[in-house]
Length: 382
Ligand code: CAA
Image (cartoon, rainbow, N blue to C red; front, side, top):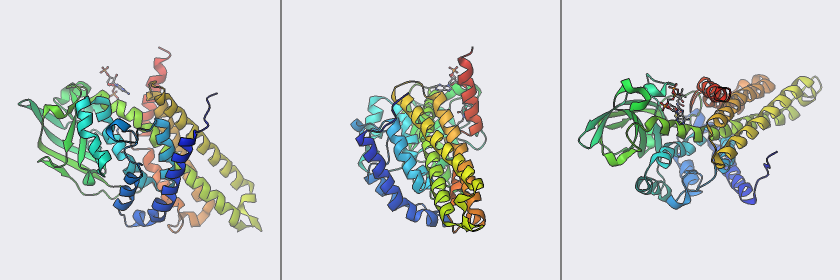
């Protein structure tokens, strides 16, 4: 049985993230959700505390944390506000292709500026037509001289209106599907780059999401990551890393829902006693606690595997799928325990359900995760 006790350093990281979430994020969560508002002051403070760029190694100025350390932090942040957490961790997603596919020169050029100053970056894979079928992207990378010209549109891009850098996946020929895709680093300042306006979302409303349009954007060969045609595996390997923290984010939402529901059940009276004394409520709380604990353990186990340098494809998809489905179910139960009050915006639990919903969709829908899980599983039986 693996030893899941935390080191002193991990406990203090977790404590620091918990304090930040409860003092800086949670008090603004309802207002940022309602307005909606992108609380840049919170993100700047998170950056100052080293809570952004968690995956960037110390040699490039980042926090250089293990996958497990990242999960500990992300769960705590999500307890405070899932939408803010999505914006805080978007740099990890956007910079991971550089870590995986970049040369030493590219890592030294692109990564330290994010650690020296507050900047945001966005991961640009999804397109309006392609959606889950990442091999079908149509953003073109036309060869031009030594370099490329990028033309196309990306959608659902986290932090896009605020980002100074984009990692962009584009194809030299859509007929080639996966084999035609390359990864590029594109500064926001490049002529022809236009982020769209903020989408009006159901949840994660403190985060910003928009399209990004690329119109004949010149990219030098020095800004392509890996060889031409390496883009698809770079995208997949990136998601293998980042889906585990999404499991942690979902666990944070679920823990918040459980805590709200349990506390409410102790003070709300019906039929002459606190509702916590009704077995119908106890059964719900027990199922909620079981789901939270299983989510956390699956997430930690996937992170530990990544930290051991083993392939993370299967475990990260399992952790993301289970924890996000669990978060939705736990938030739903939390509303049910609150009854009519749970449906009102005055109470925090309806936001948790809206926030949990996205974790079942982004970084690969849970239907896609199940395809990944089944394929990985069946390899063992072939
Ligand atoms: N690591 C390395 N290589 C991989 C890989 C992995 N995890 N997964 C696949 N590949 C390789 C395969 O080995 C194969 O290589 P060969 O051609 O050399 O054989 C190639 O990639 C094609 O693989 P598949 O045949 O499996 O591809 P597919 O088209 O059938 O399916 C998919 C792939 C898993 C469904 C993929 O399209 C996918 O993950 N889709 C979901 C995309 C996604 O997660 N989008 C979310 C974007 S991020 C986000 O949400 C934005 C945000 O800001 C929050």
